[in-house]
Image 1 (tube, rainbow over the protein chains, first blue to last red):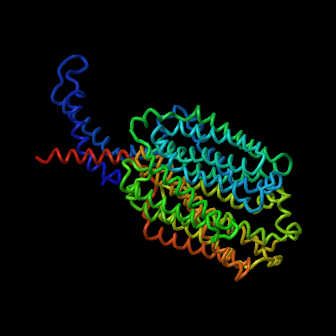
Image 2: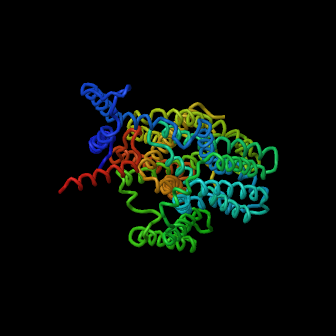
Image 3: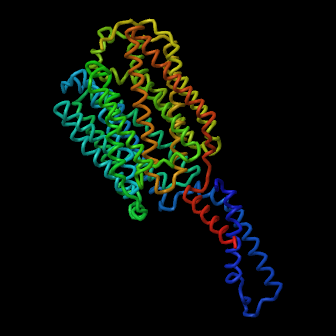
Length: 460
Length: 132
């Protein structure tokens, strides 16, 4: 298999050379001199030599040309501003998604109070959002492959803006959960298609590394903005404004995307990819039930023994099993074709990533709770967990202080990373990064609790 | 309010977590999108984000089980620590997998997956044409 540019030059080079020399011989060597006299054999030789030299120079520069292309602005952008607008539109999708995840955690106590959400179902608005995303991502990714990333991306962003506005007007927990789930559908639509657009337009190289690193940095920015606005809104005004500010940001992004993203739908429709309806249905329903069962297990009346939890889990797993069967053996154009994992290193990478991102989840949720319960002992906490429900600005201030090194570090590291990824082998960076994952939790696993902690039992 | 050890823990942990998520996510995204042909870029996007969300969900599910099952025996504080040790174990396994099984090279300027595929086909055709 051809894996490197040099291999390509070696295998394909001779073909290029023979083709080129034929063309050159026939047309490039002039028949006559400038003043009309026929070329002497010396002149003719001179021309042939120059052309041969040019050819070898062209041949060696396959490598150089690929290098140059990897750094140039992709030809689809007419100017640097077109490219900036495009990158801005796509990166903002990460910002908005993180805004609606991180900020929601901060505004949740206010919502619980204002909408009378019962304690046992207080986790649902957040879960509805991420569940809708996780279950339907692959489906919308396939839609993008079929009809073009551009229409699905703009659709997703507009849908999110719309349902964010509606969510701000929620009058009860049911409507809130419904709106959050629909917000999630919008997010599921634009997330994979943002990657689709960037991955299709950018050649492997420095420019792509920088753009993707900016994309990753945007998640950190969104995290920051989400917490900030949620805190400010919770303190000074009606909670609906959190959603409306988010909707405004999404609407700006939708408009900017509409104008700045080059449309790829014509090209993609020609690929003739069709939707795998059976696989999609099985995957979406299987994932929904499984994730629901796992997430609800700790909040249902009897935990895992509540009858509907294991039932849903088993049904969900059966559906996923059926999906695996369908994708592997039945579907003609499976939603998740198994030869994706034939790419070298893909299988181990996927497993390692699942574990690593899981560690992220633990960090974001459990470390936060741990710090609030055991380490930031302040007079507010003496009264217990419930006091914090009424002071969102305090939460956001505490969170600011806690998360500032993470935010600043993330911004610097992520952006700087983009500039060195083409110099350092990925494996080395991943191993280095792996120690980061371990260290983040190890510090807390080993840490002695602070001087001001109570081993109070937390009623569950 | 907090003592210095706690500050070190919080900040140190935050720096570690940043090193974790930012580098891993970027490299994984670039690698996956670079190695997929154009008509599968949507699938690549779907995969990248699915792995993120499903990884978080399933791991949080496990963690919840661990926390809920241990809290009655060893108390709230230690149940949280149990979750952290589970996370350390998971991250260690991931590190071993990355070190020994994942072979990702530099993300340098290169042909796209489509171009490589076209070149292979062209070379195959050439070779077949050469065979009499």
